[in-house]
Each structure stands twice: as C-alpha cells, then as structure tokens.
Length: 205
Image 1 (cartoon, rainbow, N blue to C red):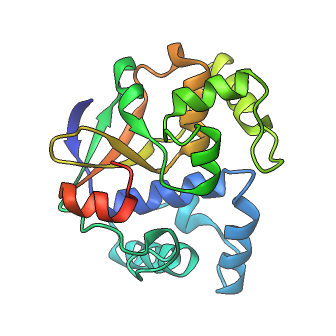
Image 2: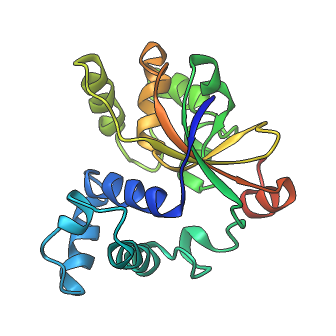
Image 3: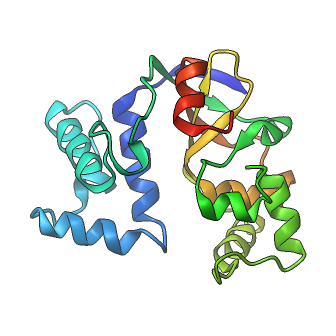
C-alpha cells in the first residue's frame, strides 16, 4: 500500500454511503431509509460537503441508523476502535493481503479462507453459494475492462498491516480478484486499530 494522505471518519462514512447508494444490492434499502427520515433529496451524499459539520453529523447519523455505525450493532457490533484513517493506493501484490469480513456468504465462497483469490477460483469453476448468482462480480469485471473505476474500498488493519479486512467493497474486490491486472492503482481508505481488537471482532486475522 502507498499511503499518500490522512483521511478521517467523515470521508470514510461518505465513501461508504456512496458505495451503498451505487450498489444494485443495497441502493434500494438505503434510499428507502433516507426517504423514511425525510431525505428524498440525495445531495447530502451525491453532492456532499466534507467541510460542513452539519452534513458530516447527518451522514454519521444515517450510517448509524442504517448500518449500526457507532451503535455497536449489526456489522459494527464489537467494531474495533480506529485510531486513524489514511487514503492509500493499492499495488497488485496487496490483493493477496486483503481478506473478506467474517460472514457466512464470503466464508463459503472463499472455501473458509476469506481470500478473494480463492473465491475467484471458485467462481471460475461455476461455484455458487446460497443460490446467489455471481452476476454482480461478472458485471464488475466487464465494467473494469471498459475502463470503469470503482469508488475507494474501505479496509481496516492492525499497525503491522499483516492483513486488510474489507469493510465496504466486497463485490469490487471480488471483481478485482477475477481481473487482477485492473487492481494496481486502486484507491482505498484504511482504518488502523490494535491487532487484538481486530482479532476479537473479525476472528479470522
């Protein structure tokens, strides 16, 4: 990884919400939630102002209600304390150090290895988990081949950077694993925490 600048929680939250809003799987759910709280206008995400504390506070609240951020629930139950965020650029060799979150679907797809590379091999052999087709990953590969660029992937790691756990961007990393020559230069946001906290939360580091 080539770290090139300091990031922060506000930027991470914005990228997370933008990624979910662009996702075929999660967009409808997030849009429904925003409408439920009276935000039918998506400018707070699509035309965000990271300098605005009012907007940052609102986006933090949205991610909390929608996904449990800072509320110790859902995917963020027992989440490690992050002591710093950085923006970075990935190099091709980093792909082998990136692991899926500890979740049943990704565990099964990767043959219990948490490795996107293993998942890619399974998909190439027509491996399907829980009757979920691999169409999204194939579409991602086609998008990359056309010169498309994904939003930054969100990862967390311990200070030794032995492994990077995906927080947001599982489908994108899966597409990169199927087409690794497109991975070099991928942007990411990395959160840093203690190793013991990471192991306790994810259980597979």
